[in-house]
Length: 443
Image (cartoon, rainbow, N blue to C red; front, side, top):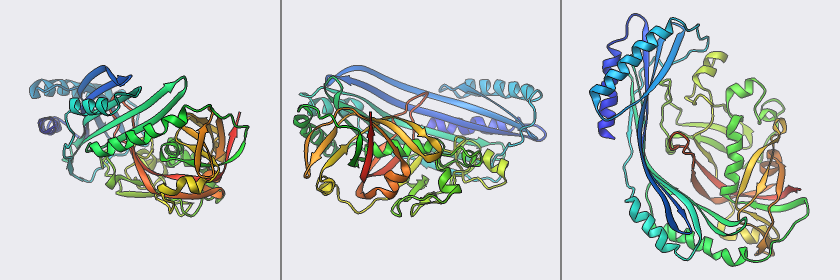
């Protein structure tokens, strides 16, 4: 990525020399070098590598702006020539663009360089290890690994760079029909012992998964949501819950916390933690993200994510949120429950490993519906008894993490986004498990 960084900054310097009058030029780079391996029946079914880099230019003159993008190669001069052509096209287009009342970009230079250390092993070695470790299992999954990079430059002289090497192995052990044990392992450094432990934990559930399913009647059940289930709830909140724009439009799913003083349990603390995450510390308009933004503190709504456009519209300062005002490095603080004791703490009830297909059933009430799916178990007296047939749930956040929350686990899972649309996502979450007194299952 070093050559790409140098080429990007060189192109930005040359293009900046071409701006005239009151023009301001913003340049954004997105790039990745990633390997992808798809497995089925613990055998390789598809292998691919992606190397891509794209350059987006935004030309601003007064209150007008317009943007365009091109794909980049590895040849500096040809990339520069095509970028110059794009710049001339934008200049002609800009004459036809109406003023943008919410145009906002960073005019105070704030440079940053983050070059992550690449500690990833060879992809072939990882897959060989996976197949050896799980040779007797029907393992289905996708392994994605490599380097993601982002760059920003403007004609005012600001230069920002971010690169990070990471892997994400999203897999399941399939047992037939809709029975499976879903697993995940992600990070920046592959650890054979950690992966072996995850495989052993999943394999240990196979005998239980092979027992006849229990069908539960609709009702309220004591339940434990594992981090891989609770993260789905947090992801739903990230759609519109924390953004200033949705809050001002009264569309936020957390509107009752803002308007009616609704609260969650005092143990709930949610932070956008850019400084400890795996995403860039800058955004497309050149603003630097705040190191941390306290979204919910001690169960009370605290601060919003504010994009540059929302800041301009509502007369506030941006805290560097992206255009969608969704968190990219979200964390929920841990609690006091030990993972090793979670079954005994649960006693009799549901152990839910995953939730799927979530949506709002009542957005103003922050009420969500979705499905249990892989590895949901019925537990009696602290012992897993049998798998539970897929059920729908319908539950309010103010009950799950409010009045009915018993506690959160001390241990948290770091979960990387598996999104690969257009490019690999750098978003992540660090989430505990949650023990809930009443969890509403419906038909």
